[in-house]
Length: 582
Image 1 (cartoon, rainbow, N blue to C red):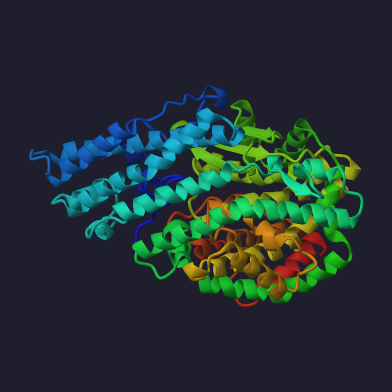
Image 2: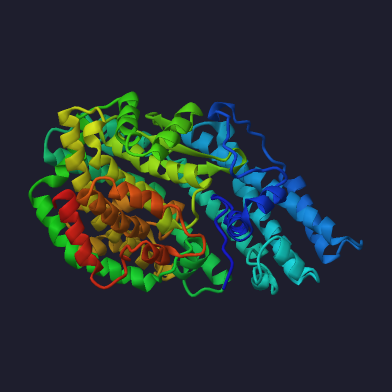
């Protein structure tokens, strides 16, 4: 078994995985002792606006981490008691918790205002140093593994066999750390790109997409404007992804893997299924669900994805709707929402300066989940908030968000469906309710097809020879995938717009998790449709994750079907019909 690592732009999974192991195997008492007073079961009473940010000193932190290594491996030339070594490891944990918390705070602030030179500089700082901190921290594991006190470390800090993988050295060598630093820089470069401010020419007139959209009268006008828009963005951001593919393939090679897909599945995404199983799932969905998609498209269902813009909703109305519908369903949701509201842990904004994304993350120093949403200003924001509130509630109830990507998306996608089951309690008007129901029907069907299409494109992109990785070739690949799905009339801009899909940049091979998670979510929604309350009960039972179980084992433990089981696509179609009437 190999050890997990994560890109420097993300949370330090090595650290949080170790904390999860400690929690699962030794209980919170040792964890509290280990982290010198950091209590994972003590709620923060600090509002987001009052959370203090201080840039951690990378040099001093590296010096401290290296001193712990030299104390354990004896390279400092001194004799140390085992108790001193343990103390050094405790202090290293404290350092990592502080580093991760400050990096997360910086990212949240940067997400709210990507034009801020102050927060852009902080992100640059973390991009340059996080991989070095990760590497130095992993060296502590290596030193513990090679120490004469290895058994003592495992008995008192970890678990038997935990350090075995580190005896031969760590994963984060200098080459991989440097590549990860480059990867992080490219991800940040994409995140800072503001396509709404990008100018391009139409008939000799230069302007932004908003400028040109004012002149759209006919479908021909629309196609012309958006084709030129996507081409312009594609020329700017496409090369960033191409460079990311090259860097990530180098990382996989340096780590001893045959492909980046294999590397990402095991090291980063912690999956218990293979890329081949994912391809088979995509093929089943392509065969079973694509006909439903085409039929819905011919009936105009997907028009609602654009027509929803004509049903405006303010931020206050959005939050009221989610609160009204969900907090009355179970006390857990009421407690979670109250905590989120009291401590300003949800930012719903509409500013063009925001990062073009919505997400929920966790700040361990404050034991607090936090949500950032770039709103659309219409009723669809209700489902976006319900989705992110699912992530938030998992973090609230579990004092942290699970690292497994497939499991982490279940709380969010499920809560969208469960919200709809209580939508009559939301306080929304008849027009808003009808629009949201139709919107969810369209967006769920679109999710299965679009994410499978995206996965196919990404899977083949990372398999291309480096010499073939040109913008023209990647655009051609996108066209080939569209044609293979038979969706030329439905994804007419994808041959250029692939360059705007954030998950391709943020985390490769993530998108299939939306499919696997929604497959489970539909089962839970089906339970709620069968008997009121059963879906909510299963939801809260399932996200009380069993620490030692993998994604598919969690489902088996709760008597839910795996997306990789025989007949999964047939069950999916049945549940789409039962829950959404598709």
